[in-house]
Image 1: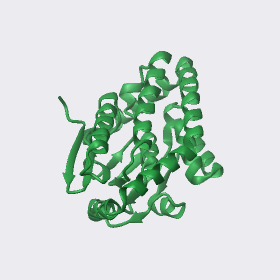
Image 2: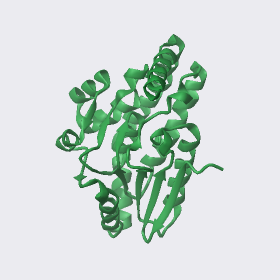
Image 3: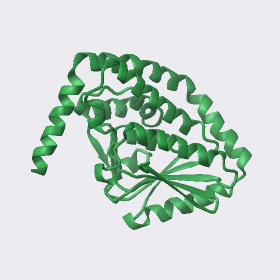
Image 4: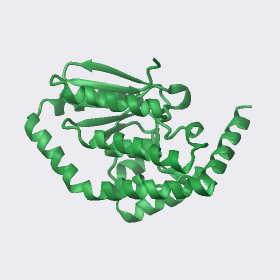
Length: 256
């Protein structure tokens, strides 16, 4: 079986690496499912007290959705796709242990959302983050919910409708990066932070995270319902398939 997700243990810290560097760790169904499985392994391992999530290579945490997967979706398949994301997001939200994103490169679209669902984010000055889904004809539903929780409505509208990516300094300024360090230090710093968090009382950690989940549950459920409905409408229009094919064709031409 292809290992699209790698796991490693360093004492009390579990490390998960998204492992599709040839496509900038872009999401597809097997990688989503393997990430869910890896998170559950560390959640049930009593020796693990904190988790670090990163991407293979030095270019991307994840570039977001693999458009080669979604470009041929039917409205019905789009509903299944939203369900896969629900499973992943619910798994992240249900963790009793702190989750740190070690951002080694771009985090775009659904990868931006995953990073925001993490409890902490460590990055370097070259990192860019944002919600460019509109440029490929994908309507945003989960992204605006989590962005609004953290960034407020005005910036959520800006990022969703423009599709622009924020540079690291802007990300830090608006409060979504906890630490910016030189690129070689991202993983060591994330692991140090994880070790510090792992040393804290686990029951209090679990209860705090449980309360944060309760505080945001209504919005999360609403965005999932909206996602199923809105993505089906978007794919029925044919626009996502057309825009994704145009994007992929332009990329093929750039590569020669």
